Amino acid sequence: METFEFKFGPWSKQSKLSNKKPIIVGVVGSGNLEVLVEEVDLNGGTKFYLETSIDGFEKTWQAVLADFAEQERFANTIITINDGGATPAVVQLRLAQAAQQWKETP
Amino acid sequence: MHPGKSAIPRGRKLVVQMVETFKDKMQATFVDKLDAWQLMEDFQLSIPPIMIYGDDVTHLVTEEGIAHLHRCSNLSEREQAIRGVAGYTPVGLARNKKVVEELIRKKIIQRPIDLGIDPRMATRNLLAARSIKDLVFWSDGLYKPPKRFRNW
Image (cartoon, rainbow over the protein chains, first blue to last red):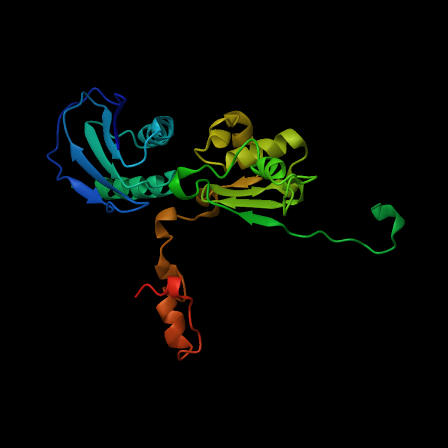
């Protein structure tokens, strides 16, 4: 079991929050993960808090999450990931699903 | 074999390799050195045991996209085409981004997005049979799946 924190951004100077409701995507299971997205004042940046069952992949996570953060540029957003040993392909899929749902959240 | 010596016009075979970039337990599929070399030593074989040689592969399909390897004009382009679909494995991360972008432009690498495919749509709902149970049911019990596929 390992935990990591990654910060990306800031993407905007705006730190006004819009009271979005948190969303959750996926389930924690073998080879799967759950992604929780919440709005928090982070001075315009994205923050990931990650708990994974498989040790030794900090660099891989860093690369996957950096690409995602750069692509979506979610300001003032904290993304919590509970991982049960998902491959980057599954991680990207869940993140894409979470991103779409987050954009559709009023 | 010298094709020029034969009167028969020759076609080419499609050798399509489909892999996920990571196997179980996050083992990278793409490696710099095949474990066949280790097997050769362990079992004292004269050559490394390999079923399909890399240079015979014409297409490489991963969750990242399709690499049309047969359209690469040289070895270094082929290398980058492989790295370009190798995802977040060490081999994939060592890609030359500029060359890979050029390969995407030349359609030697095609990602889902280039083919108008949304990966989020890739669920069992797109399949005719969504489970082994469907196959058993449709065949009126003629198909008897191995025990490990009986998950109902």
